[in-house]
Amino acid sequence: MTPPPGYLAWCLAGLLLCAALLLLRRPAARLLRLALRSSVGLAALALFSQVGRLIGVELGVNLINALVLGVLGAPGFGLLLMLQWALR
Image (tube, rainbow, N blue to C red; front, side, top):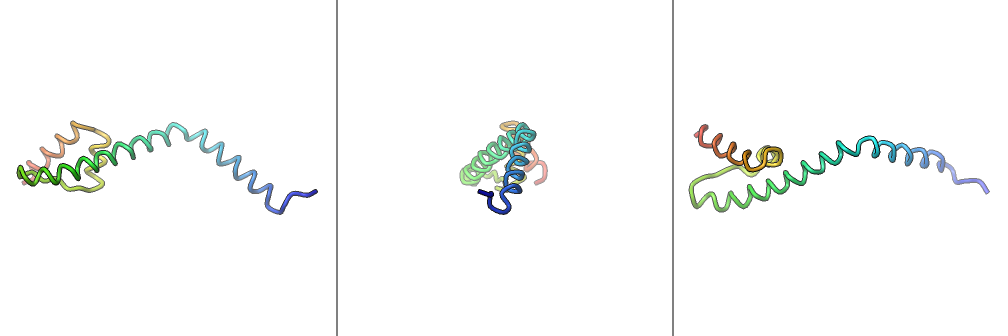
């Protein structure tokens, strides 16, 4: 019995994908961790935007601010607050 047409190409593509995933495991894990931390930062910005209006401090809820929070964490939040204060 002969394999269906294109079977060898699909097997080769699957092997190449597995090899690429093995080679890029660490960078992919770092990107995933950054994405998770940035999504938490975005949620924190959304919550702070609701509370911040009451105390008169506003930060934009956008991807750049979320990435700053994802990379720097709590010091990044302070940096964003100081930057917002300095630019007003």
